[in-house]
Image (cartoon, rainbow, N blue to C red):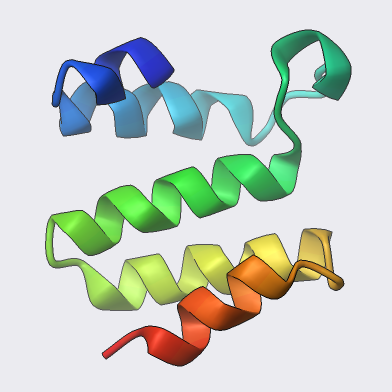
Length: 79
């Protein structure tokens, strides 16, 4: 997902991040949490103008990690 995002292939990056959501994974091993996955997806949807989807994903990320100030800030700054 990160490689696809770095290559600006947003469609493929979304697909890979979405594939992580239903899975249980070792957060330490892959270097990201479920909340991080939601944030990455939210950021990608925001970049492609899909504001309602982005908001929903960020809200789900905040549910997964209620103390994340960065997610709260992103939601506050959304159009």
